[in-house]
Length: 276
Ligand code: FE2
Picture 1 (cartoon, rainbow, N blue to C red):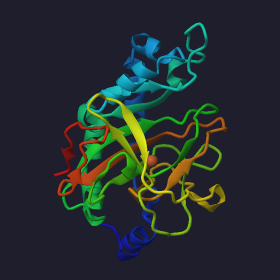
Picture 2: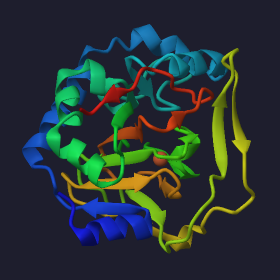
Picture 3: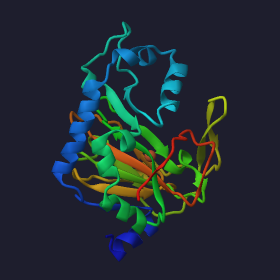
Picture 4: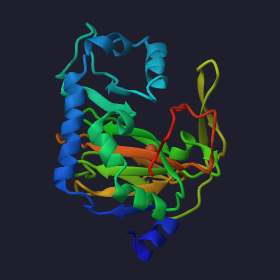
């Protein structure tokens, strides 16, 4: 499915961009499915978790127990001091996670499609398995920054095999906070590891002192809806805030190879879903 050139790009750069691989109709079906989940979501059930500043413990619990569920996560400052949403619910959700690929029929079918399985095999995952899915809204004006990081920090395995599949559900531009990656291919060690302990405490452990790339050494991946970006777990990447009036919806899958040893310290321990 991938050309030799595309495979070489992936090996050399740590990522490959497959422009408009999926149809707008397919992306629209994901968007509709996400909208339905938000529509069905009772904001009141979760308001207390997100509406006050001192709820970090509840927020952590809500996040850490979401690996095998479909949950909506509000934006940081979605609520005012009176505990009311500042804007309509559909524009207040940051993301949906983390088991859409198992529990939602539309996302399940899409995530386990032959195309995605073949790509995972082409990119070196001999036994691809999905650990996590997320639908990210990057809402207009309020979608915040995601700082430089590597996804292997959250999906550590020995050896490191995690791949991120990042699907542009809508056009992604520099204005609405597109993905930005390290511009110059340079091998990066794993800088941090996010660990979850038996008592559910978490910690972002520093593993290496190498600095992140400078922001002006980042390459913005401005892509059309339907484009798939795949990158390896060591590729540094970030996204800037969305200051525009256009949302930047994306769907992501995180996969590892079942032959690698998935770390017990990873926050997400839900049973992975094999692609074949
Ligand atoms: Fe990431």
